[in-house]
Length: 207
Image 1 (cartoon, helix red, strand yellow):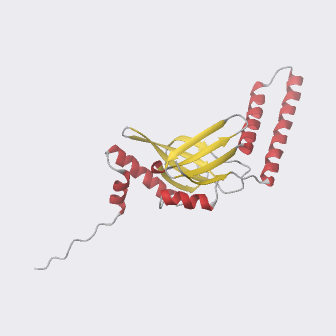
Image 2 (cartoon, helix red, strand yellow):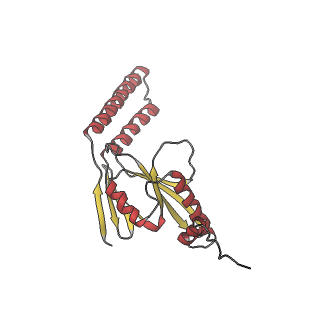
Image 3 (cartoon, rainbow, N blue to C red):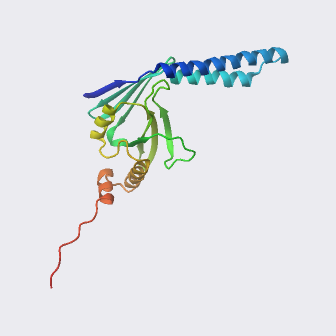
């Protein structure tokens, strides 16, 4: 496996200060919950749970560090947090594409797996990478959120041409084509080309 490109997540001081402010506010909430617990002579377990979990999630997303690695065959992401280290990889052939992340109540793709592989203290925009997991004649979709430099996406596009940083509709269409191709036992790339390549007119017939 040959490494073509590697980069690490960034950290902005302004984002770190914002996270710190949120943590301080939550700690104040914990202190107030303790005050109420003393006055009520009971432990407010639900409030403690919500506040402590919120602190853990915010701190984890802020301090976690990610390394994005592009090899000759796959994308590899190494995650290092205060709790543990994680490894993620996906072959280029399984990547449906990348589009700009936007929060939405309803999605056009049903995601079986969702991962966040970027730090809240990283000031760069968030991108959604959609990939497929093939099980027999069924396809499940996964999505991971990442933040990376232009160079990363430029090299990624060399292996996933025409589907990196494109409109979400293009990715939805390709994911649907993949699912249909797998269902019918077709080669995904050939099936996609067959659907997207205009038919050529036949030769003129003279009488």
